[in-house]
Image 1 (cartoon, rainbow, N blue to C red):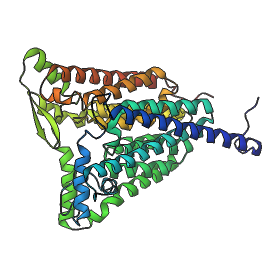
Image 2 (image 1 turned 60 degrees about the vertical axis):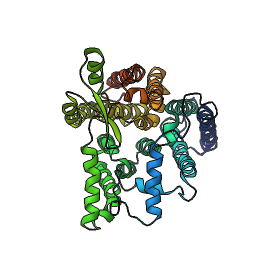
Image 3 (image 1 turned 45 degrees about the horizontal axis):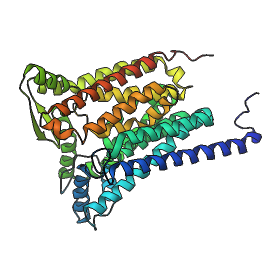
Image 4 (image 1 turned 30 degrees about the vertical axis):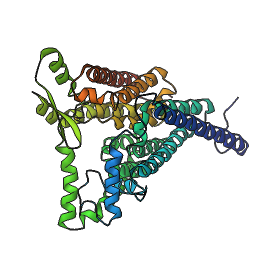
Length: 423
């Protein structure tokens, strides 16, 4: 049977029905995933911690409460997050105390997660119009979401997952400027989405690369303008936000810290844990050097990754799975040598990993294991790690070994993508 063209009116009702089924299954899978997450964190706390036994929502609550009382971020108080994060903190009301705020914030992040799932499935549908593949993407997204655990509603990184899902959808649809715009919004939310800007620029037709860059620049810079133009104090507040992240030391969960933990445990090298910059960090011989090498190592690794992507740009224009695989490689690569590897970072992987797992279940299982081990590490084994106990060390080591394995397998899979599209 010959495939009908997209403009064939006879196929439109069938495709509309197929899309309705796909979206329905996505929402059903989301319902099941959220039911599992709530059940696992409530009552007997099957996985060892309650849904709100995580610290950052209390910090968000303090920021939101200050704003509710008329104080201005970057001007009247310092905040380590970019400007677009502020509205997300402010949306839940602070009138009824911390717990009510946590519930409201969780509902906000749950909504972002559901929207990210829908956008991810739509990215698959736009490319292939294949109901079976779209079902697999929806189910894999839900499975991976459960593997992330309660962190998904206790940090604002579900908004970044939505940014990446919309980026994949925009690339699939050929909306290059929209991809740039969405990534610009992501930069104003979390800064790190700038790592993904080269992806649409390399895949887009040359005549669209400039407009895509301009769309990114407008969306990325506009939220900063009120503070850049707001006087010396506001600019100083913004500068402190960037300086905060540049000055952060080597965090205890990072891959770069893992050799120091190994040397400490098996060779008796001195190591202690200190709390600075909102995280627990390693103080040990070589820790400062490792932290200083983090940015050059990340940039060098991503340069190699994007060189491989550039060689396959023609194939990427035709293959949604290859684009998702490229995004997964970039995201895992950005985590590999980061001096800070917070548990919520795995939430970023959801859209790309779900699309890849629909065709490569082995890689999907590996990413799910990375997420599940991260959930086990934080918070259940985190106190053990801080206190230099064996459980925390072995969970950290297992998680970081799986991170390296996931990156290696995803790179191997991507290198098998042809450098030229098949004719």
